[in-house]
Length: 80
Image 1 (cartoon, rainbow, N blue to C red):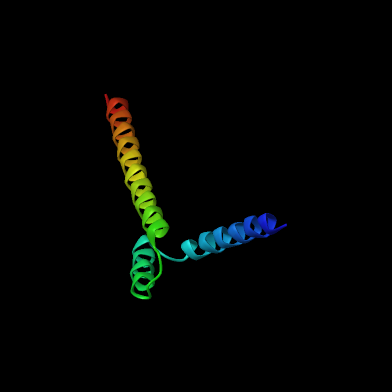
Image 2 (tube, helix red, strand yellow):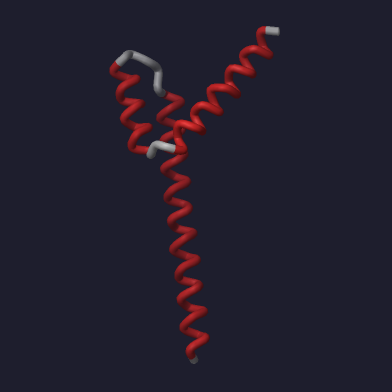
């Protein structure tokens, strides 16, 4: 029974976090992490999340650049 409560609470927290991130940036999340650290809270998992999100943004940016390069090459070839 307690395990079910903990799983339900984890899902609720995850859902709240997703909703919060829809209206905030990674910089906002960093500020929150610093604030929590100053309050003496353990932010280890939060910093891991921030690192993961930062990595995802970099990967998406790289994919966008590669896609743009491919589109530019296709357009250039079409002009020939």
